Length: 112
Image (cartoon, rainbow, N blue to C red; front, side, top):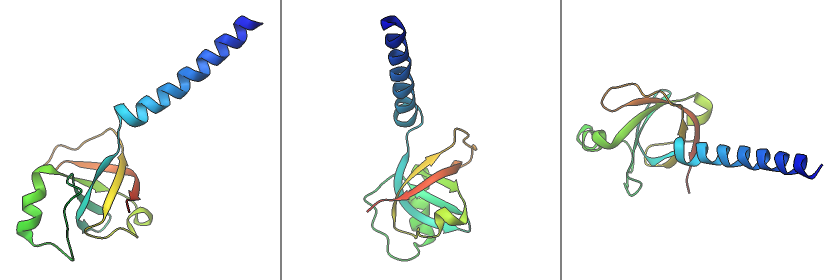
């Protein structure tokens, strides 16, 4: 009986550790600043210290292009997000090779 309880406890702990490891290490969220919004797509630069007010110029967008990712998402998730907002984006595993890369956003959370 004790052995069965220990095995169940070990399996339960293994499941929790696996979920945490996957969520935090294997597929971590992407944090950054929204540089541009185009329909259901948003360009997110990795730098969270960017201060943008209003729509950035084409030159400003180009300056962040090497360290940015386009995220495709639904209207519901992008409705409250605007240019200059700090966001945390959880995404799928597939990355479309382009410059900047493109990914599907699963969850978008506005920081601050």
